[in-house]
Image (cartoon, rainbow, N blue to C red; front, top):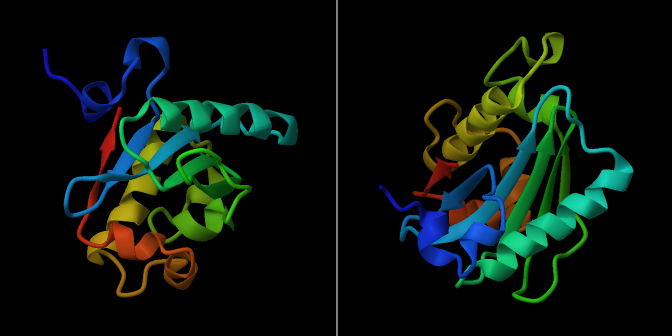
Length: 160
């Protein structure tokens, strides 16, 4: 049986669900965990608090400090910072279609399910890391402003 990054680094990984994906830097250190929900699951305002608690739980069981966390659904991408003790309010809030229409021009016109949404978000993050599709991927400046772009450069993502 292959041990995933999450299982190898979490102290009580059997007690908590895995995040949808993680992003790692070029040194293979996890820099972001992401929770993704596609159609018909949208994070409603009252659910955001519940899911931020879940993100904080992910971050607390990791054996290292993971500086960023993301909640993404078909409407919004919210990015939070983690200092080892507290999860911030969103430090960046983006409209999902504004980010992902570059990777699927039909994004706003069809139902998007969780696995596909996860793949599109990973494509965007990898584009920020390697510029495989766009010279300036969407929201490059905003990602740099919160110091996430610098951590993504040369890294990759892993899905769970």
